[in-house]
Image (cartoon, rainbow, N blue to C red; front, side, top):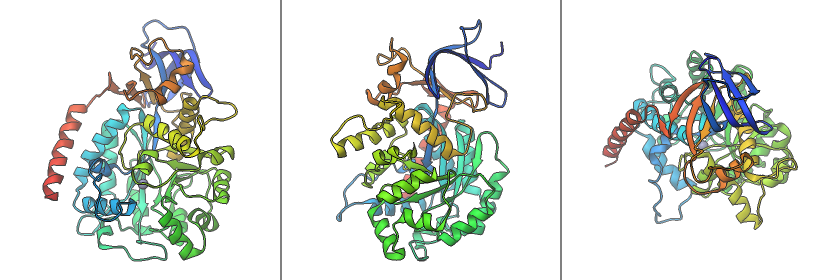
Length: 456
Ligand code: ZN
């Protein structure tokens, strides 16, 4: 028996928990066999094993802002006043600092059970507004952080040309984000040299505010087939109003009228939807990329989850601005937002799955995997060996039946129940600590000190 094996007393497979499962993987980190088994001699064992979650929306550098924007200003605070602070922060940050912040973030994501991240990366240019010698310089630094920490990545270089609908020119503070279709295809080309089992490369038109539908069509035409495409959409009522003023269409309607949206797409936020738009997204098979803690933090609104699910809609979760690095918190808030607004309980379920925690985790795995464009989100042959081992000694889990594990994980308490994390066949978190935690934390502290000096 090789060492590339783990025996799970209980493993979460696509159709639920199974007792006695032997997982085996190859040198490339892909699962080769997932089979019912007795516990074999000499193979490591674990009580509860489940697939790691996909974080389908991240702006890694914003991790350094988390907790720093929670003070009221003179006028009512909103997404838009938060954004001004974020712009100021992004003005000076170096590629090395981005990498240090991303490494800290990804190590935290891993410790909390995310094993993949979709990085929606838009700070491409140097502070002077020019592209770096390598157009993908900043994206490559963030991808380095993913490689260093071990998290699987879908890098999504962001097409960002305008400050508003109708090709409104960028503001000076958006100069580092500026990218044309040609810039983005060049950045994708440079990143493609590093594509592999741990890195997929896609495309992200920032929003219908920052990219025209003509540009989106051009970028899609230059993108290799089957790559993931993510876009921010309908996050704010203000954005819906701007879209209506410009096009007489709501944002999702406007996008669907002009671009063929299919299963490759992830519509991030998609908070403010008409009945028709809910149906259009569900019918197209695109993933709704929900970020409940950030959407709550920014005062965005509440996604219409129940009608979307009733029509077979697919969703996943992301940590976006990183006020939280825990998939548990995203899923919990997703359900709680619905309960609070509807004054009912147990909303995220299906006719086949009446347990909310199980439904949420499994559905977010499927949607997240689809949005990532990578073979993840399931313990099955051919998928990446990305898995979590829960802390069976924790009082919440000790002696618990597998059928109650996900309800407990998602809805009980604030302790992190993830003990060990494997990505691509490699243990990256052992006994709750990332294997490179001291070095990552030291570099992050140094970077924060540098950034604070710049601020004063
Ligand atoms: Zn975002």
